[in-house]
Length: 146
Image (cartoon, rainbow, N blue to C red; front, side, top):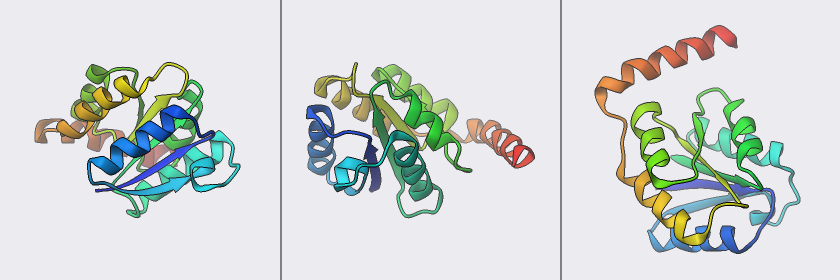
């Protein structure tokens, strides 16, 4: 799977996240400091969101100190459903009930171990067909707001 990964800083969490994703066999498209650029969180969230929305990436992962800013920025891109997840249960719910396509993580509260648990849940969970009708209603809201 092609995954867009962006952060407004590079640290031990992002390094562990990238290593874990590569170990799982994913192809990564990096943004922000992870790609050698000094992009702030709004630019990182937007870039990852656009990569997912255009199909350049299948899914995305965004990180900043709290995870909130990049989540907000990514969600400004039509077609993106970014979810800030602090644990595996929230990640599974975001995938199951919201068909989230961008995972947002806090660099402050996420440890490499918790990140692995979140990734396990994220990749193991899909949105079932009965939830897709609700996601279609969300797309209607997005179109009406656009």
